[in-house]
Amino acid sequence: MRATQLKRRLVAHRGFQSRYPENTLMALQKAVDEGLERLEFDIQLTADHIPVLFHDLDLRRICGEHHKITELTRPQLKAFSASEQGRLGDLFEGEEIPDLETIIQWASAYPTLSLFVEIKEESIDHFGVEAVLDAVLPVLRPLETRVTVISFDAELLAAARERWGSIGFVTRRWPPSKETLNALRPDVLFVNKRRVSHRQHVDQLGIPVVVYEVDTVRRAAQWLKRGAAYLETHCCGDLLTDWSDHYG
Image (cartoon, helix red, strand yellow):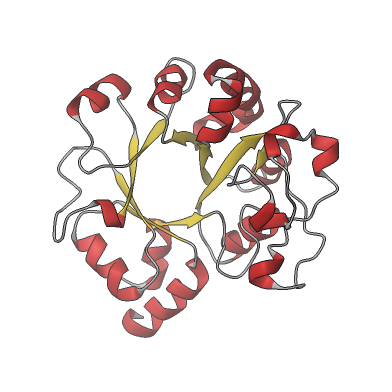
């Protein structure tokens, strides 16, 4: 498999996160610039029920601030930068926390893009399943055929199954239980590579599986052989360069 073929099997985990601030428009754009067509990002809700791209409940790691995102309104959140200063220094000072509407408008200019939108458990716990879906799904609607709603939360996915075309379950165990699979009927499964036993294959369930976090050529080749449909990675550009060096 050449690097041009590998691109179609990669999912950019929070964008090109290894080099740029995660879950920002810059990180997503840089992944697209590398030729990726599948992006994953996280969603939390602000206090005024605006979905924004953010992984953590609190702002400490990303913004260096001691606030919870669910307790700030969208206007209040604009005062903080998603620059990840602790990891990236001052390189991206002023980089904004994007709201979901902005990202959907941006993605509409790329007709081949597919989006995996992970709704985080902290917001589900704080606001409730229906309130979160009511806030998120209308914003996603313009790209409905290209968006898969994913989550660790089975209750949210069961509700989303009735309202959305494509859902993905992020499982904490491998394989997930038959009861869960029968109840959710997910279109795709996400699994941390550490949850899968040594040498176990992941293509036995008849459902495409995305394995994360895959960050080296050796691991990428191994997981493709073990049946992964897609590989989720923080370092999409670097992985493609290394793959090209090995395989052309």
